Amino acid sequence: MKKLSVLSLGLCIVLALASCKSKESMYKKAYEKAQAQEVQQPATTEPVVTPLETTTPSESTNTEVDNASVRQENVSLVAGSGLQNFSVVVGSFSLKANAEGLYNTLKSSGYDAQIVFNSERNMYRVVASTFVDKAGAVKSRNELRASKYPDAWLLFKK
Image 1 (cartoon, rainbow, N blue to C red):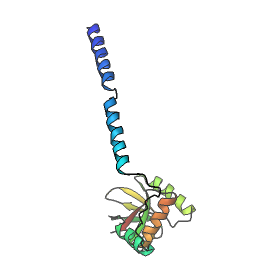
Image 2 (image 1 turned 90 degrees about the horizontal axis):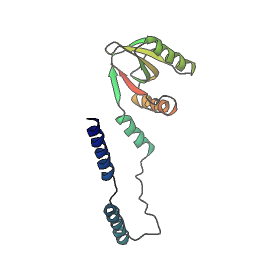
Image 3 (image 1 turned 90 degrees about the vertical axis):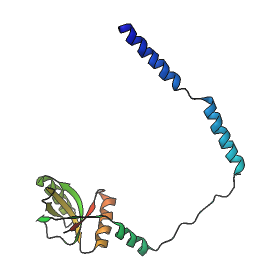
Image 4 (image 1 turned 120 degrees about the vertical axis):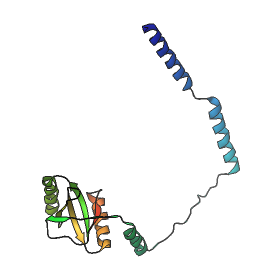
């Protein structure tokens, strides 16, 4: 029994190694194809440059604001001065103590941080900033993502 299993294992290894060999014909075909393309397209001395579409800053900003995803949730204020329509959330926690830790960190960094509670999901959301308009919230979210909070997202208070 032992000899049979060793023999079959050896046979499997030999077959596996034999099938892994690169075929010279495959390399030859690829080389010939590259040679044919080189002959069809002679090398140019000047690189080809395609112009980019130019948009004014206001157009790109408006598109970015319109395309920004916003999550709507029913939340109640736990700590802070109060929410406006759009908020930038930088942390979500199931434990209030963890949310308070991030809240204190944001407060010491100069943010008008707040903690809100979503009772449907049983989650504490830590808000770094809150705005009346979506454009201000998107700008703040992008700044926070660029600096220290890459997972920042937008919340619309129902």
